[in-house]
Image (cartoon, rainbow, N blue to C red):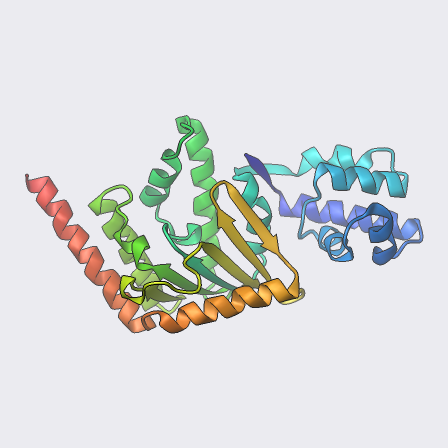
Length: 279
């Protein structure tokens, strides 16, 4: 389990790094060479966009002669718990002005209803205590707050039909979840496209991807697998992910037809839930 930072404290951390770097008479590029870090990574830390790991902090302390200051400061950034492989992506998600996601199996986190999220977080090979599950649930549900601003970020969601058909938590939970997505789509808060089973193989079938754009830095891609995730910043790799997304989007149903399918499947789940209740 990893820790998500407090954005305000992270910004203070970055401001202190910038102050000490400038006091040492170093540019970001010069510091990056001496600390064996990329200049972009240092720029993100100074802007409060990223949390350095322990090795980063130790190298910064060594180069700047700060006697362990930046390593000791790291625990003050601790806040909500998130999966370790997702911690960095979560930071970017909160700053993005556009998010385009493809979900192959599960509803994306920012769209999950409480009951759906609780079922996902309760499952898995390693059992979680109720307290552990609830900590994760709070963080997951807080992510949906980025949809509170109607205009930013712009959100495009590409769902494999498997997301609609996989019965997470039973028919009642699925009915509520799919209607929630349809309502967001009906209100034009998000764009939704479903990749139907009939398409067969498509460009994104291999796994989850999230493409994020920002006002003041280059776009990134985040890909995820079992207990793993990776941020991609290399322009050529990000471009490849964007091309794959566009290809898959071309195979998907239109926004209108996707919403109709979501409502249809939700209705099927509602009828199923009623049959279970009556039996």
